[in-house]
Length: 206
Image (cartoon, rainbow, N blue to C red; front, side):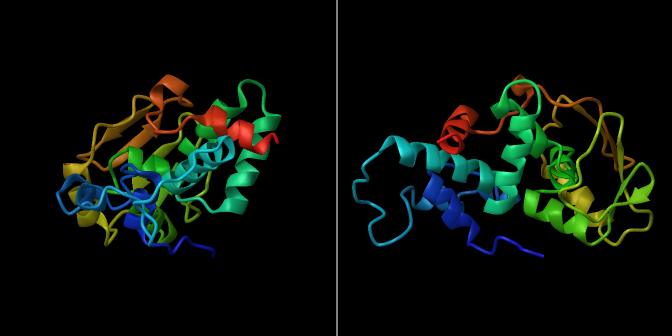
């Protein structure tokens, strides 16, 4: 299974903003953005010519890193979004939001998407009563997400619910019983991802 093994804090510094890749650490003064608010590398503090291509590329990289998706998989999401009716950029974000690892994180069951991905891969998450261990699994409206009974990760999940942000408006969560439900596919106004998706469409349309 391919995974992104790049240092997470360097990814945030490269994009120049918090991508919340390390959960609660991103909310403290230990966050790399708080300590070194400039790109990594020898020339991190130098001037970079902001060409149109670079701006579009950075936007694509920001979205890819935010959701923890590798390049080839991200490209497939874009191709699928372009075939769907509606606005391609919004379709792309909707597909990424409905990934199971993202839904688990949005429900507050994981402190970060990487932790959400690990919970799914290790078989701690159930969808409609069946164990699903594929992080990219596409959730649908009315899907019920629960923690596997007697799961060894229950304390980890409860700890994440205590520090997690509010639940996304297109989801419903019961942190007491550790269960959640997908109410509907999210609208663009309900997705707070710090990405200008139109630039991604322009990049791939070249």
